[in-house]
Amino acid sequence: LLLDLSDARQPTPQLIAISYSWITREHPDPDGFHLKLFAPLLRPFAQLLKTSIEALAIFIDWCSLPQEPRSVAEAVAYRRALYHMDLWYAHWMSYVWILPWLPEGVEATRPYFVRGWPKFERSL
Image 1 (cartoon, rainbow, N blue to C red):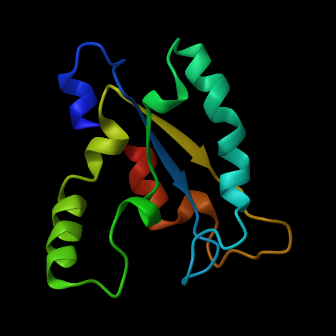
Image 2: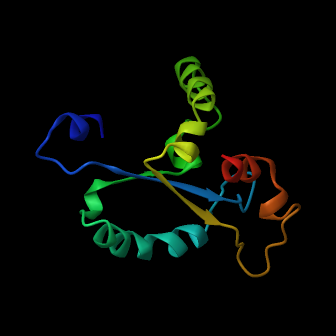
C-alpha cells in the first residue's frame, strides 16, 4: 500500500473499513458469512471508482490486527493500531461498509447497533 502511494504510475489505493459483528468469540466469521456478503461487491465497487480491484485496501479487524495469543512485538503493534483505529473509520478517503446482519439461527447477545466497537466505528 505504501509503495503504491509513492508510485505515481499506480492508482491511489481506495480504503474500505468493514464494520460487522463477530459471530463467535473465537472467530468472527467461521463460515464466511460476512465474507460472502461483501466479497461480491468489491469488483463492482472498484469499477464504480474507476480503479482496479487490486487498488482496494480492505481493513477487517480480525484479519488486519494481530490476534491473541500475541508476541510482545505483536502486542506493541496491536496497541499502536488501537490508538489509530479511528483513522480507518473517519478518514475522508475511507469508505466504511456496515454489515449489521448475522447468519440465520445465530442469536446475538447484543445486536450490532448496540455493540461497543460497531458503535464506535459508526460514530466516527
